[in-house]
Image (cartoon, rainbow, N blue to C red; front, side, top):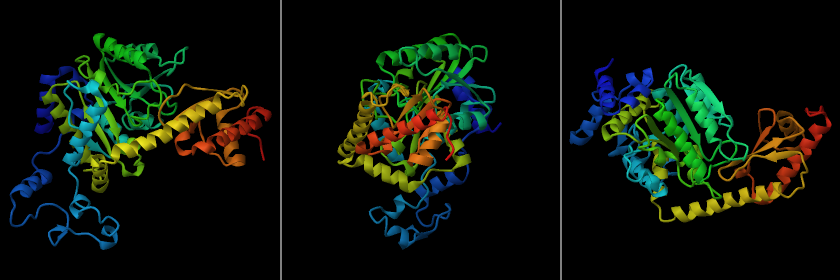
Length: 439
């Protein structure tokens, strides 16, 4: 094993032995080179005051070389903030500003040691870093049965982990913390579990309330006290889009310092929060450990980044940073939030109107981009196909009964027509015996 990797492992084992046990084989082996091109270039940037012939970019007239056909479209930004490589960890100021934003929006984090957020190529990249560092073949990833399909690719196909699913809702339509606890305790023989907490949930748009949040934390603590090491990942992709009386903070803060066997990891980003999906700017933050352990985990994270994408895109980091610093940022974000909340409320009003009879129920939702119908008399895939073929509507079929509808991309005045079309397609399929009818 490389001596740098061994030093990081020794630090984590000394400071946080239970976290050391959580690392995958790759997580143990990975490190960020301290002697190499990046470190020598960094040293040259500070000391080479005549010529700096280290880093692989081209310069002209004292700034990064660039094409005018590109720069003329981006003239509000200096070339140095667009064309140079961003550091593997991301722009330092962006990392600090995002941390400040995180603390402001999540007061429960205050008083707990957390790492400085590392910039990722949006949230999928952050989740893949978690998988690389902590998931080995056969490890359990505990998550509700209504989940984002990319978890299977990221943890299962890439790393060989096993998806352990439990029902998202209990009989009262609330988060099923008891089922989460049971799924965790089922991993006692393994002694380790990776828990993914995605709120607002994709695909249902559900966020637990305060009591449910306490029950989730208690279930994880119970598992830790029973000797199970828990990597607790909060996938906060849709953070802030809370439209009703649910949790308005990430559970990351409550998980920090919960138990020595619990490692909280927050994966979030500007993608949905700031409506910049194509910018691909996300963050990964560690908590609940000593400063030395957090620093070692950051170094291993940088090793994964260096080995995969080297560093994230610089221009989009600059764009996000400038937006976060703008005096107009909060007001403009509030305007978009009001639009999204209006759409969610309109959907509930439409669905509760009674006009669609007994063709479906809908799963509880109160946040995010999505909601899910539970069809009673027609197959979800057949309805999806009928909607495309006859009504020009795209939806997502999940399993036999569930149809995901993204109200985030439908203007409020058009929502009733959308559900009218879904209803017509459902009746068509029902009349054909529950399957798609031929044209």
